[in-house]
Image (cartoon, rainbow, N blue to C red; front, side, top):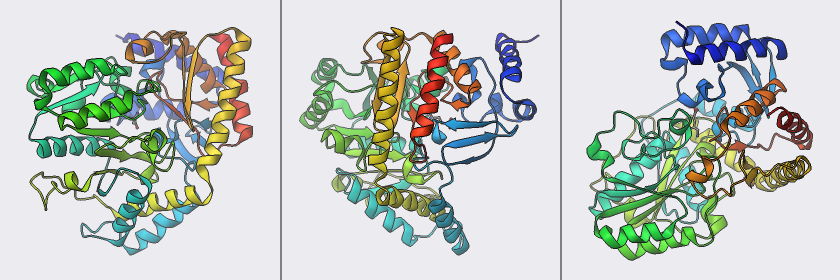
Length: 447
Ligand code: HOZ
């Protein structure tokens, strides 16, 4: 018997057959994938469940466009979930990876690219004095938390509702991103003893953080926060909130961890900490620094980083960490961003999109919220001011679904979830932004 989801997918695919050129190759691949891969995907939010559909499969991607296996071409605002800041497959990254690969694809022995990458991160990210490379954002946050615990000799960690720090056991509680999208913000499989060490608080409420520190400050190893939460839409901190977190952690000797996996090297060279003038103790990084290859990093005060093995007692390791291809790809991407004044261009494109969206909402008499910083943006289908997860959850998810479907049918790909952030790349241009605004105008008329 067909599940409700399969019924909905069928209806949606029928609609797509009419409006898109064709999608039978994607349908065939997804059928095969579902027999071999849980849910047919290697990361849940890709499954299109929240938009009553089935994913398309990509054949190639170049610049700001992706092309699926049926030949449909789309303007892409997912950008491989953030890394593709120069657009897809930029020549500089292809050349760097090719050149590195000819010398060897993995050594498991120190290589010169690692030193160049470490130097670049230390130069660009204000709070980082030493850095260790890993393979994903999840590894970066997981290792940061372990290091904070080892450094302080304490166990408890404060995290905030709707913040997503990858699929780390102790952080997969009240989480955003795919966990929220699929209605599983508290994953099964996390021992209750682990979850008990995580204190969950609402975002943007400094009084609650202070109250917890006053009650048990000597047990708290760390406060971890997404610098700008970007896995429950895109939320901004209230005036003074981040400084408040900095102050209270300093006062009680807890480690302040900034998760800049999404925002690092994206909103500015030095991430949110550069924009806001905040100095965390540790920073988790990923996405853009890998140039599209699997990379993460965590870094911060030398005194804390030196607690890592082999110098210190906190163990952390990885066969592929500092992989030469990944380092070469990331270095090429970041250097090209600098050469092109990429951040200036992204701000111009982001402002064009924002101006267009705001004018459109006004014209249509809609009070929806639109948040943007540089090339990151999110439209919330609610009139409530967005300050925390509760306000995010007031958004109309049925309206988002219709909006998403209409955008896709018009050849614009945004993330298939209302809880993800959109990304503009340097490969987008005014033309693409204007096409997108026209599509949004139509999509907002059908919801
Ligand atoms: N964690 C990513 C969204 N914030 C999704 C990763 C993926 O599905 O590729």
